[in-house]
Image 1 (spheres, helix red, strand yellow):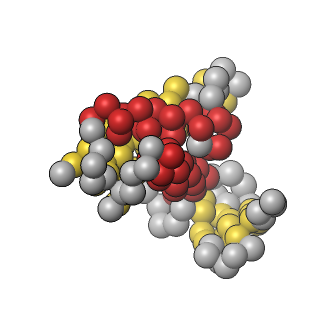
Image 2 (cartoon, helix red, strand yellow):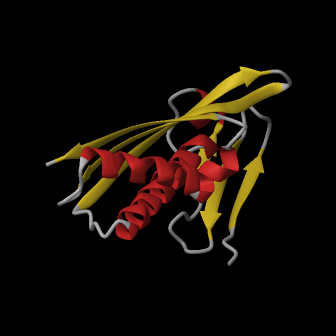
Image 3 (cartoon, one colour):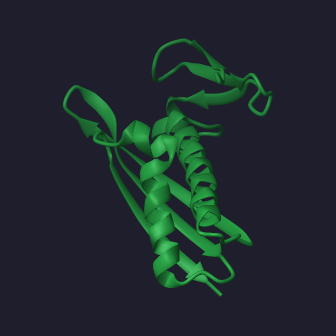
Length: 143
């Protein structure tokens, strides 16, 4: 399975601008720039897209883990915070924090947290960053 997206950049780093598009059409000439990455400009940036990908991946993986335990969530809501920091040689993603809340009838705190940890380790986006960025998780089960 392959998925594709494309980007076009015009101009210098600080004065330039670009667009990002995805093959599905969900992103179509979506604006990004130095200001959207390092300040408060209008548009998106690579780290925000990684955060969205990780939140979605983790939520699906948690649903799968819960399913293996014969539990069906009413909902799973995840926010991912990606930290871009100055590192040796430039900038790098140093941390990703996952904050998730789920309503899962029949789940115990123990079964939920076990599933959440399994999802954190098993999600393909988590695997991509394992060993390269600190990935933390705060998982809350609500009734």
